[in-house]
Length: 249
Ligand SMILES: NC(=O)c1ccc[n+]([C@@H]2O[C@H](COP(=O)([O-])OP(=O)(O)OC[C@H]3O[C@@H](n4cnc5c(N)ncnc54)[C@H](OP(=O)(O)O)[C@@H]3O)[C@@H](O)[C@H]2O)c1
Image (cartoon, rainbow, N blue to C red):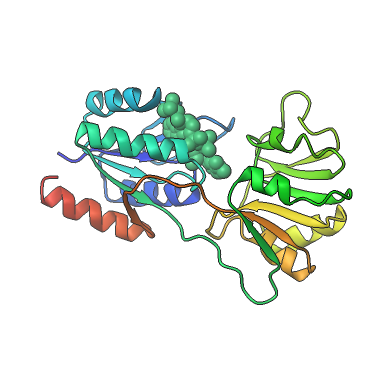
């Protein structure tokens, strides 16, 4: 019997959940629990960490999971590495549903940096106005560069003070539009955009908007993840599941 665990938190994971529900697959959807009101899924859903590799192995056994689809965000490297280790140990089939990374086109002024520290170091010394589109978790890393104004976009209203004194948070959930993001950048007189190379369509608008306004972008490369099967589309994942289930993997 095939029983699937979907590691979610992305629009791709939500699309996969829809396909699995339509196919009446036996599947569980998992959220980390980072946001207060995650999108409802058409699959039984669990919320919260598993407790590292050991906890995930234990969960896979107890829930009788045969297949894991890691559809987490490309920057959720800890969860993805844990999934590789736990699936290997538990003898569970694993594939990742991962969108391609963004590539610069004509008119883009992108500086690629390897990680968050690289983005901090790439900021100029003179005070500027930055759209820091990196979510919430890594904000403290920018605390050493307090001369800048930071515009943040967060899913949930932050509890307590932001770790950056000269910052303003816009509360919004994607997908975003090119026009909307251009208006946002203009309204806040933004000089530079800092973003993760997330890939996909939902967060792309800010890069179109930056190009429209001739703004430079610091783009943070994806973290390294141990080798695993990677598929780019929901229909490829569905075909992989059908195929490996037929083979009794
Ligand atoms: N990082 C981003 O930029 C970003 C952007 C959009 C959405 N997200 C989503 O937000 C979630 C957290 O991202 P992150 O960067 O904090 O991940 P992370 O650093 O890779 O994960 C940290 C820990 O959170 C738990 N976790 C993460 N994803 C989980 C899931 N889908 N189900 C159950 N537990 C999960 C795991 O805890 P245990 O070790 O206890 O199992 C994991 O070790 C992910 O699901 C991701 O898809 C992340």
